[in-house]
Every structure is written in C-alpha cells, then in structure tokens.
Image 1 (cartoon, rainbow, N blue to C red):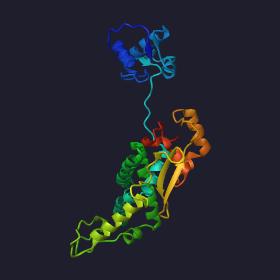
Image 2: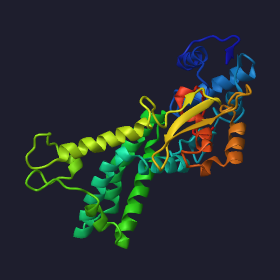
Image 3: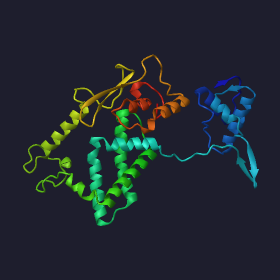
Image 4: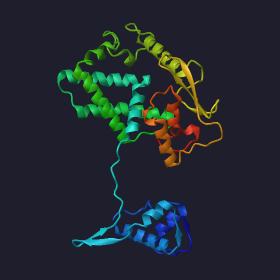
Amino acid sequence: MRLNEFDYQNDVTKAIQEHIERGVPFTECMFRPGSQAFTDFYREVKRLYNEGKIEVDWQDAELLETDIGECIIVEGERVPLDVPIEIAEEDDADAVRELVLYADNTGSLYPQKESIMKNLTRKWRKGVYDSELAAKLWLYWATAAAKSYAQEFGYAFSVQDRKAAAKEFEENWRAELEAGNAMESVQEGVEMCPEACCGKPVTECKCGPDCEHCDCYEKNKAMNEAQLNEKSCGEKGVKPNSPKRGGPKKFYVYVNTPSGNCKKISWGDTSGLSVKSGNRDRVRSFVARHKCKEKNDRTKAGYWACRTPRYKALGVKGGQWW
C-alpha cells in the first residue's frame, strides 16, 4: 500500500492515513459496518484508488472494485451495498479430530477423564443424566487437552473446536452407557484408597509417605516415575513429540510407540527446496497428494510432514496443514 498524494482533513481521512502509515489493509476498516463513517471511508478510498493517488494489493483492489461505499434506497430506507457480513465461527472438523485423538492418547490427561466418567456414570444410574450438562463437563477436559497441546506443539484450538470435541466426548461416553459397557468398568478400573484413610481414588489421595492407613504415596510415586520414563523416551533429556530442525533430513522428532519403544522420525527435503506453506495452491495440492486428513499415526513421517507449520520451533509459517 502506497500513498502518492493526499490531503488529510477529517476523521475519515485520518483513518485512511492510519491504514497507510501502519500498513493495515483497507479490508480491515475500523468503522462499524453499515455506519455512515464506514460508507464514507470506502467511498473516499475508492475515489483515491480510481484517481491513482493510492496503490493497494490485490485483496484491497478486489474489494474496492465492488459497490462497497455505495447505498441505495429500499422502501424508504438507506441500504449500504456489499457490506461484509460477519459469519459465526464454525469448528474445523480436522482440528476437532486432532484434539480428540490427542486427548484420548495422552496419559497425563486420563485422571481427569476418569473422574468425569465416574461422575456421569453415577448420574446415569440415578436417572438424572443430562446431555447438555454432560457436554459442559467434558468441555473442561477438552480445554485441558487443548492447553496441553498448545504447550507441546504451539497450536491453539478455537473455542468452537473445543466445544465440538466436548460434544463428541459426551456422545461417545453416552453410547457406552446406553450399551451397558462402561458403567461397571469405571469402578473396576479405579484403585481406591482404604475407607479408613480417605476413600478416594489412589490418584487423588494426598497422604504422605508416613501414612499408617494407606500406601497411596508410593503408588503415586511409582506411577509418576513410569510416566516420566515414558516421556523421556528411554533417553535422558529426549522429549517426545517435540519436532526440531536437523538430523539426516530437514526435521526430526522422537515419539513413543505403542510398545513403549522410542522411535526417531525424520522428514523434509534436503536438496535445498523450501517449504511453500504460504502458498495456498501448493498447500491444497500437498494435502490432497499426501492425504493429510487421513494421517493420524504419530509414529509415521507422513503425520509430521503434514503438520509441519504447526510447530514454531521449525520456523515454518502456515496454517493447520503444510
């Protein structure tokens, strides 16, 4: 965006000056859509553009070649033309699927999930189960998973993505309850602290090593050490699911396999080609060619190649996919 000549006088012209000096696209008008100032803003910008006094990029040019800034009278009322309409944010099906898979496969998140399942199982047995309230409860778990994912990979899920994931969690657990498959398994899968102590699940017991009524402290310590060993990937200082630059190819990452082994995965071109993640056409082509939306196995290079732009440490800018 460049200014050739322009005389600044009022609020609208000052707003245009602000856009030019700060490099803000004219597609991001500061005035309320449909207001008089909004109309005057675009009318003035279009005049300057048509007279060759300002230069804009193709996106601004595309907008300025519409009827934005013009008005017509309909049944006695002034109606602005080509005013952008804000559309409610929708969830991204691929992002929702990614969040669900991450939550279901991250061991550190399971205690909270287990607590929710127990809570909802009790409500189901009492006949007071409410799907809407249950989804709100699952939203806490979806949010915890989203925060963990953001800390690990640097990608933030939207509120709508988290709500959609929570809805899926609710539907899946309700299906288990309806089938009679999950109500007993919740109790069977949780080891409880003796009633003489606190009667809570072992993972929730706050007793220390000197408690006379339970050995929950030692059990929790052993579980924590097991989780740390798994996260360490068998080597001190090696963090799983944390991709980096380098190795035999452009990028590499360590992951834990289902068998508990540590696996190093490398991917990326080493012939000097750059990642064209900023080119939308190339992104669409890559996603279609490599079937990125079907790749959900973290132990495969394809999973990481399709999600390269998500990780800030790799220095590749882009969206959800390559």
